[in-house]
Amino acid sequence: MKIATIALLLAAGPAFGHATLQSSTPAKGTSVQSPKTIVLKFAETLNPAFSGAALTDTAGKTVPVPSAANATSITLLTFGLKPGAYTVTWHAVSPDTHRVTGKFTFKVIP
View 1 (spheres, rainbow, N blue to C red):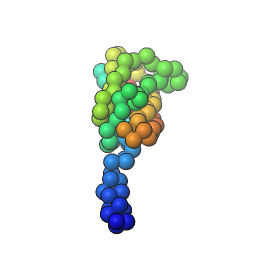
View 2: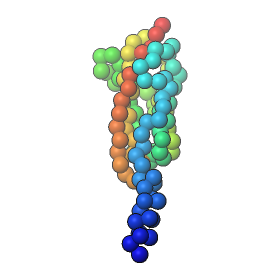
View 3: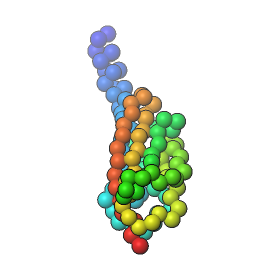
View 4: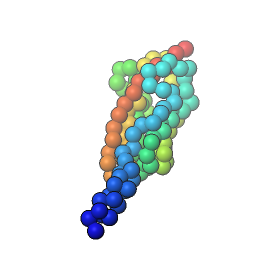
């Protein structure tokens, strides 16, 4: 019976993954023309009600942009960002309720 229980727990292991950032557009550290959207894609399923992102400019001031989260990504709608450096700060919660946070920067060029 113990072997069956251990096997079941090991098989369930991947279901307990954390929602880590898989990719972003624009990508971390890149220089781009003003994007219309910023899209963060995650390796695990998200709980959209508890996941989100924010955008700040070079001075650390919050840039008010609409955002939406779904089961696999977070999208920020960015209309007409001025040239400069920006930081995206995100938080993602997977169905197992683990909260993961992160941030990355990119630069908007003229």
